[in-house]
Length: 136
Figure: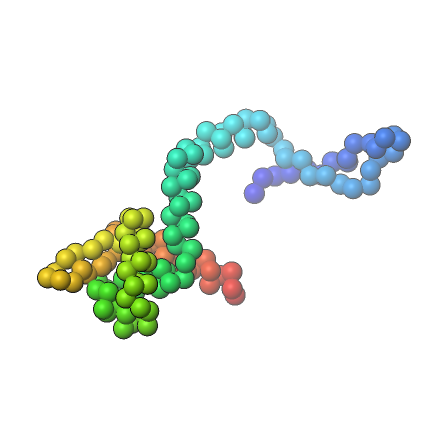
């Protein structure tokens, strides 16, 4: 949190002081903001992260990811576990694959899906914990 001090607002048009109080950051605001600006991710990275968040914004896809966090599963297993149709699951899995969140391994005619890497599991866990904290 940024330390601040309360200062009186400037006078209004009649010369009277406005009774409201304003908060003004202490220290070198310009230098602090320049430092923050330098540490911000590039626009391309922010757009990629926004696209990832869009993919994670669907509860059906999150259910698939949570299931795959527990075990490698094929579409038939996911159908039984989640009670969703094969076509819906295939559509969600294609979206998740395109986003780099899941990977598939062919075994005969079936493709077994798993999380792409440990970052995906960490994202799920952090999001879940954050949602639970806000709910309580």
